[in-house]
Each structure stands twice: as structure tokens, then as C-alpha cells.
Length: 360
Image 1 (tube, rainbow, N blue to C red):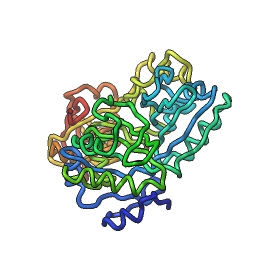
Image 2 (image 1 turned 90 degrees about the vertical axis):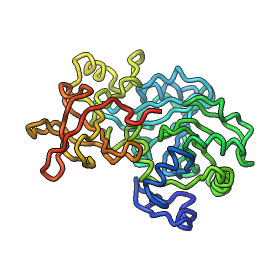
Image 3 (image 1 turned 120 degrees about the vertical axis):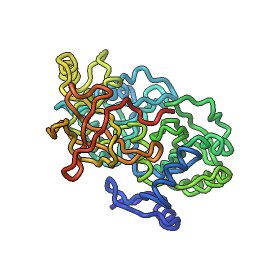
């Protein structure tokens, strides 16, 4: 089991540590509910240093990224980030990721912790362009400072104008006296805020500075438990739950980052699938009956016939009702459609709704 650079600090803070994606990670410090509301209403800090980071440089960098990712990276400019995914050759998804353009011929990829080795091997196997790749995953610490008070707290630590940064952009600058910090506005909570990438040796200094700056706003450390409820309220996909090697990215609602204006791995097959019409779709639903939908619970019609299953589900702390994602046949995918979640042989009523569940 791997540990993040600030492992001992989390132990000192009393975090409950659990295995996640091959790492021992803090799942909570106080309670999931308290930490969730802290991020929605004030500011919280996640240590997400388990995520993977790759550098891709050189004259062949863009061509390689264009081939392995479905979105169009040629639209990027210096300081811009793009959400994308790596299609596999069989119609599924290797991983979803973020693509940062640092400069021409200089890109930075952020991938999911559970897929670091898989993604590295996959991209390397496609690298006929001779791009220079470096796996930076073990040398970087990543703190996600999230919530409506994040900007005010972090602005004390840097001359970079944080409030002028648009969503899905980044800057490289000095923060808390640490040089060359990547400050990125790509949050996975929908609550606003920034991701801060620093070298491992600067991790504790940055953590302490962030908590000192955020003290007046009630800043707290936040674990993976609240991270999951926060991302689900925004209907953000989680790899391994809502998308995987077997799921179609188009059925998962990733058509918006699938750009058929260029060739990429398996693009012809995905284009054919789109033209033929999708058979099923990832939908969001809210519980009408009392009950909490959990992963792998069956989604059924009124007669109890199985339509699909829950891929992600929870009790929403903001809405105070059960919410979930799952795949259903297209004919059942319309907003307002009544479906049922099978919980211990009982069919509990739910309704398909437009996502995100929690609006800004």
C-alpha cells in the first residue's frame, strides 16, 4: 500500500485511513456530513496526492495527445486545461483525464490514481511520435482547496490574481513563498476553488500556509467520503463506477468531449455507434420513496424487470434525499420517467432528473 507525502500529518490530525486505489488515504477527519457542508459553504482541503501526473513534451507531444484522447487538444492555449478521456480499442474508456497546456510542445496530464500504471503503459504503447514522457506522479503533492471561501483564503498567499482565473485555466506562480506552483481552477466538487501542485518537499509548508490563511473562514481538512458526495451532487463521473474499460463514452454522456473533427483511437467505431443510435444512457435519478441507492443496486421498471444498475449512489447532504447515476435503456432515459431501485427485494420509487442534482 502506497502512502501520500503528508501521510503522517493526516494520522496526527486523527483521520480515518482506508485503502483506496492502492494508497492509504484519509476518508474522513470528523464526519462526512460536516466535511461536505464545510466545502459547500466555506472552504475545505483535500489531499489528493494519489492522482497521477505525466509530462509530455517535444515536437510529437500534441500529435500523441490528439491520437490517444478524444477531445481536441489543438484548441488549447498556454494556461488552459481540457477535460478528456482515453478511448480504448474496443469501445470503452481507458481513463478520463485532464490535459494542461503549459507551452507549445509542453503538456501535463492528470490521471486517476487507480490507473497510473495502466495509463502510462497505454500512452507509451501509442507513442510512435517520439514525444518525451516523464511520470511525475511520485514527486508531486496535490491539494484541492475547495469552497466559496477558497479564493479569499488563498489570495493571501500569492500575487497571482485568483479571482480573475476562469474555470479550467491554470497559472504557474509563487504561493506561500514556494516558487513554480501550478494553481489550477478545475475543481471536482462544483463548489469553486483551486488545485495546488507542489513538489513533495514543499507539501507540509503549503498545507500549513493554506490552513493559516483559511483559519478565519473555518477551513477544515476533508476526506474521500465527502469528496464522493460532493462530486455526485454535480453528477461528475468516477472512473471504475460510472465509466470503465467496458462502458461506451457516448452512453456515459461524454459526447461533448468526443471530437470527430480529428482521428483518434477507435474514433471510427464510436462515430458509427453515434450514427446508429445509442442503446442505453447514463442517467441521474432522485429517490421519491425513502431510501439510499447504493452501487450495484438494480434499477427496475414498475413490474420489477431489471433495466440496469446503480453505478454511483448516496444520500445527498445538500438535497437531503437519495440520488444516483446508472445506465438504463434509451426508452427509459427521459427526464421525468419513473423507475424503481431494488433495495432488499423492495422496489423503491425514483424519478429521472436533469443533472447536476445541485445547481450552482
